[in-house]
Length: 128
Image (cartoon, rainbow, N blue to C red; front, side):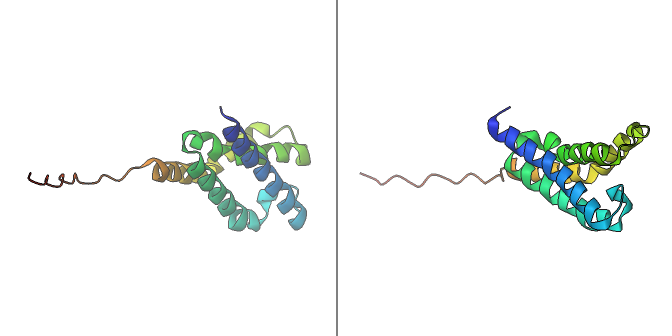
């Protein structure tokens, strides 16, 4: 993994964690996804983040698509402190990551797709 990929991965992870903490503080919810703003604003923002990072680094689209949700999971563990439902939370974040993963894959494909161009004939040589 290159340094650029590590930076993007860290940015995605900490952006997801930061969004979770900030939205939780703004709404006063113990778990951020209890707020309607989570699905209205945070999920689309995370999807755009994942797509943008995957466009810039298409070979790591899977990691970049899931990293913000791993960050949100870590932030949830740090703020909520309820460890008895950890497997359920992990499953929920895995399911919630599906739209972001799909957009990340699409962005990676758009970046790596090369449109086919019809072969152009060579110009005729000038006669001597």
